[in-house]
Image 1 (cartoon, helix red, strand yellow):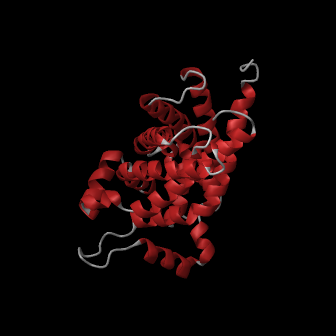
Image 2 (cartoon, helix red, strand yellow):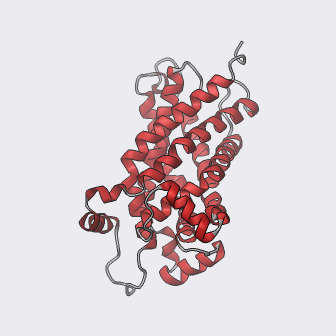
Image 3 (spheres, rainbow, N blue to C red):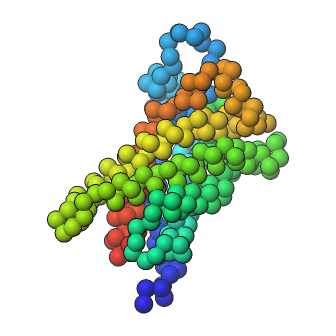
Length: 290
């Protein structure tokens, strides 16, 4: 009886995912902007001079571009998150329906493949908008709208440029998602079960959120180098992945690959924990097993 409405659950997963994406995008956009600025900040500081930190970048943006300047890149962020998270969760849900036996939690490897698979589909589809978002945030381009920016990239750099950073993005997101779903499902499986256990109580969302935070920090730090590479490939026209690796190493040294780790870990972790919590609550509200 379970399968006659299989289109609806996927649609519901899409809606649940998009809604959770919207909330978290609004809240955490400043962290994303700061991360992009940190990663593209000038490296011609003498070694040993004051490190450009998260807080100084925040204050700098507010001083130059007022408080709302922190929300630069909002429109491409939304254009990316709303369909992106929707595509991610609906792909995740359909993959899970096909490959994981009903009612069983996915094993670690299955979880990696589910997370990675869903992220690949969403990542490739949304890549042009990711490119625009990174450029909006770095403050070096004067695009007016998302559509205008897409058009201008097509005109000046050719349509292929819209997919610049594809390798770096997949290197970042597929492992992130795989590692995340693995840590997340393992952390959840480790929670005690039973009628009076936390998982079935009113603090279940909190428990999910906790698992989400652990998983998010781990996944975020492990994929930080790929994130820095992606930013450079997308901000500097015609830069290839390997050139970006060389460039970052030459200009920032090995620690350059961890630039922006704090704001990204904060934002990714909060966003992803929030996304999964909202997703699971909404799916439960729809009476579906997430």
